[in-house]
Image 1 (cartoon, rainbow, N blue to C red):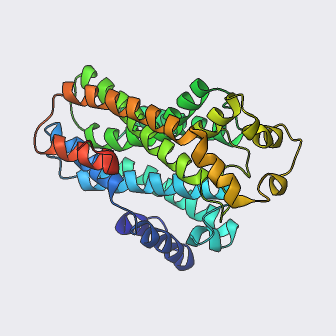
Image 2: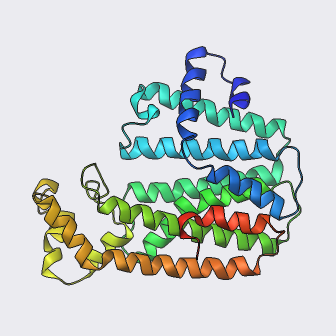
Image 3: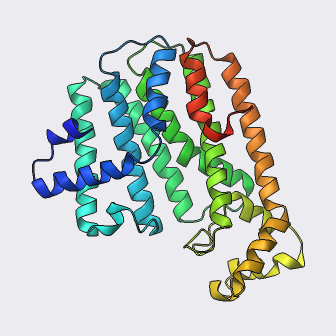
Length: 298
């Protein structure tokens, strides 16, 4: 990633800013890089350029993380939130141009380049739905999440097999698997966000995540204040005047259990797809371990 961007970002301050962002990203698990590598090797690949493709995956995901934080105005401890917004935006543009340039060096063009842009555009469309709170039903939420989060997993897989001649059936299975994995992880994030009240969370943005949609759909007086808040009848401060009581209500409501059931259904579907996937061991199992993460069935 560093070498790639050195070719395109020669202003010292901007180059240093990107590397600060990259260093922070290194704290995360190397999930995205590993998915690209495992997808490549499990489908019989042996390209000497695969690590460059994996670096491109990581940069795309880094861009997505930065844009997401800028839109939500959270993760204040991240370097891209602490630097001047104009500089952060320039870093995003520089990364985009660096990725496009590197794809050119790798002679990625035509149909393959179109497919990369389609996958990224799908994620952007899902992200925009999330920003404008377009989800008013569980089905809306599931579609939006597959577009927003599932597309990133699709991209990580695609960067692994783009240099290979894969059967259409295999590609379709990987796309479906990626959408399931995206759902599993996003639902977990939404559950975790709902029960943390020490920082800005989805409630303040009136987002309709899966557990919140459950609460809004159930006829129960205990959920009345939450419904009033989403209807604009009361403020967030009024809703959360007793935060501990509110969090206890969330735990008692059944919304987290409901969300875990949906997660389980997604995981079961993922396992069914995975079982049919024609791929080489041990990379196939490694792919499963990395993609599922903490949700790997015992």
